Image 1 (tube, rainbow, N blue to C red):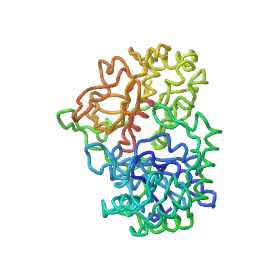
Image 2: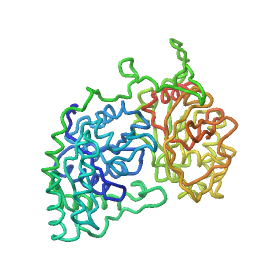
Image 3: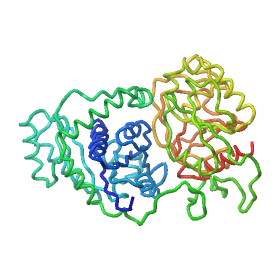
Image 4: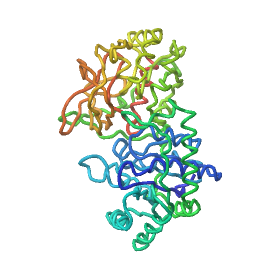
Length: 482
C-alpha cells in the first residue's frame, strides 16, 4: 500500500439509486480479476461493510467524518487499504448529503475530496431519457472540488433507452462507464434498520454478492473503471496510515472535551499525566458479543483493545451458555436483539453469567443492542436484568448524529469527555437514563441518556473509538485492575 492506492468513490444522486449493488458488485468483480480490493463505506452504516467483506475477503471499514473527524478519514482509509491494489468506497445517501445542518460534513462529497478520489455516479435512469444530462450536469458542476469521473446508468429499460441516455450525456462530457439493464432485483432483504446482515443469511448473502458481481461485470467497463481509479494520485495532505498502536509516535490526541455548558480539562484516558499504572492482569481477556444478534461493530475497536494489551475473544449470546473462561470485561455492541428476543431469553445460563459479571463490578461496555440485552426485559422476554429498565419495539425510528459529553466518570471515559456518536434504533428503553447517565446530548436536543453503574456503561449511542483511543485504553486498564 502506498498513499497513491488506486481508488474510486461510488455515489448517487439519492438513496435507492443502486449504489450498494454497484459498489459491492464492483468490489467482487475486481477481486475476481485478481486484484486485492480494499472495501470502505462512508458513514456509520454497519451492515453494508459485511457484504463488502464477502465481496473482497477483507474487512469492510467505515469512513465517517462526523464520528471520527475529517482529519482521520485519510489515515483510516490508508490503514484499511494497506497491501491492496485498489480501493472502492461506497457512498451514503446522495452525493452531497451529510450531517443535518452541518454543510458538507460527513457527506460522500467531503470524503471524496479528503481522499482525492474520483467519483462514479450511479443514476437510476428508469423514468428519464434526455433529462439525465441535466441531472448529471448539476451534480458535476455543484462543487468544483468533487471530480465526477464517470456515470453508471442503472435500471436501463432497453437498447434504445440506453442509446438515448448515452446521446444525452455526450453533451455533459462525463463518460458512461456502465449500463445495467432493468431486471429482477438481487435478493437482499431489508427490515426496519436496513439490509439483513450477512451473519443472519450467509449462504444467501454469498449468492447475492455473486449476482451483483455478474451484473456489474456484464454491464460495466471494468478496465475503464480501473483506469479511472488509477488517476487518483497521492492522498491529499501527506497523511500516514492510522494505527491502533499506543506508542508516543502513534497515539492520537483526544477530541476536545466539554461538559454541556463548559470545557473540562481531563482527557478520555482519565489518568494523571505521568502517573504509574496500577498492577493487575498482564493481559486481560475481553469478551466481545457476536453472532446473528450482535453484528454491529467497527473493526478498529478490536484492534484498539488488542493494542492496549487485551486478549479479545468473541462469543455468541444465542448459543454459548457460558462467557469465555477468564472473562475480565465485556463489550456488547449493536445488532438486532429484538429479532432474537425469544432465543436470547431462552439462554438463561448466559444471562445469569452476564448478570453475575456485572454484579462483580467487571467493566461492561454496551451500545444499543447491548443496552437492550442488559435490561430486565425486551418486549416481555426476560433479559439479563443488569439494568432496572425495560425495552420494547417503538413505532418511530430514531436516527441521527449526536454530539455528546460524558456526564460522569465511567469505565469508558472521564467526566467531561466529549465524543460524537450516532443513534439508529426502533426501540425504546424506559427509563431512558439511569441515576448516573452515560451521556449528555448537546445541541438543540439537550438531554441525558444511558446508564453508568459500577463497571457498566450502557447507552444507545454508537461511537467510533478511533476518535478517542483513550476510551479503549481506559477500558482495558479497568479490566486489568478489576
